[in-house]
Length: 234
Image (cartoon, rainbow, N blue to C red; front, side, top):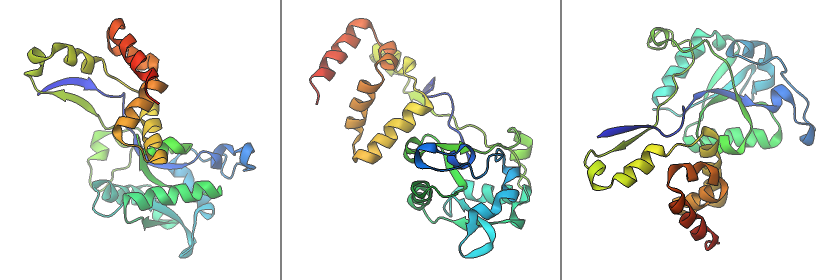
């Protein structure tokens, strides 16, 4: 295999809150609930906003589903940051349940805090803010009794079979130049979810929405042919 580099700059993961909690949302009539909420260490003073309906003496933190490696990491971080005194860890049960809990709270303009990652369709639909953590430190992160720092960015790479370089060099050159942004990936994943679209429809959506991006991947004459073909697609 040959590594042709990243698909996009990075893929963050962490603990998120709706941005309207910090900045408000005038169009929806939402005032800032927690204007000074910036980091995980600010959560204890705002715990009442996240009150757990099953145990209202503490806030609720929405953890990732059981069985995920990140779920156990979140549990350790939770204790390292001292949040077990003011928050309960709530198991969302599944990927879809985690997203649904976030989406439901967002549509109601309510407080929500929990784990998520990008790119992700739900992150493309909602305006969320990732809470600050201490900078990533491999020694801290790999300490199974600590974990008290930011997650490392996940690298998403383009890999090809070595023989493709001689069999289809023009394809290799296209793949080598292929690079998108995190925002673009969130956007077309959101498009797929909202429109029940398959990958082909998502590809057409991407090509029509971001022409300046993909035209940089190919010769001008090829780009013109793609552009002409897109005009014939509904």
